[in-house]
Image (cartoon, rainbow, N blue to C red; front, top):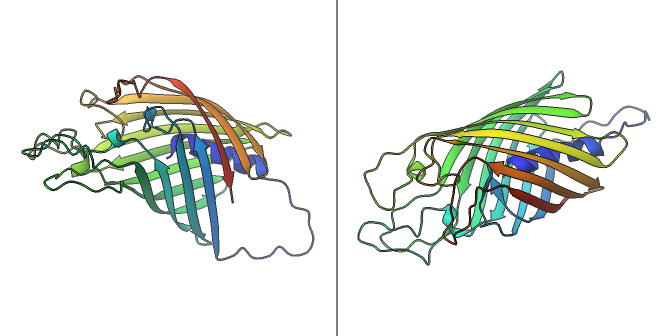
Length: 276
């Protein structure tokens, strides 16, 4: 989820913001607000790596925010089966080719607060892959990842720094299908994002750079334990609740999918989405 639409949503917010005319006392904000999105994207990229074998994905989100700053959210996307550990060879069981996941569901909870233009956001994200595993398949792909970010708004520009940390857990084992005794790993992701709206236009620009420290089933192959860097540049067009996006995404990693495609190779990603 995350990199491309984090920037995109910031641009949408800037583009949509208009000064309110004074007309009596402002109404108190509601205790709870509910927001959602629905998106069609040409390639779901997670930290620069395609999660859909460079094919289209359907995505959606729903967020409930309390006036205090606490929020819960669910985000989902279609994926390709290679992003999970299931279907790998496991001891005495062959392969579970029938039992791979084709959906990713992210369950998120956190707290966000803005003070003098500086926004602090801290929480945890749980990656869940609904699937049916064959008997004897002891692999695990679901994991938790706490995060924290800080952003600052100056004029039409938003700058954000983010850190995500996935502690040692079974899903961090790259070879869990071949060995039940291999060591798990932790994973750190550091990223910087910039987004800006172009004044008096519905256009916005985005820029992203991030670095993954350590292995992850979602982002690297067996040779990627030393980490890699991803980056992207994009533009958005917003009309009311509809947004169009285009972004160039690239990495210095190598991830070859079962179909023979390089999921980490640079490419253009386009999207159309609606917010409500």
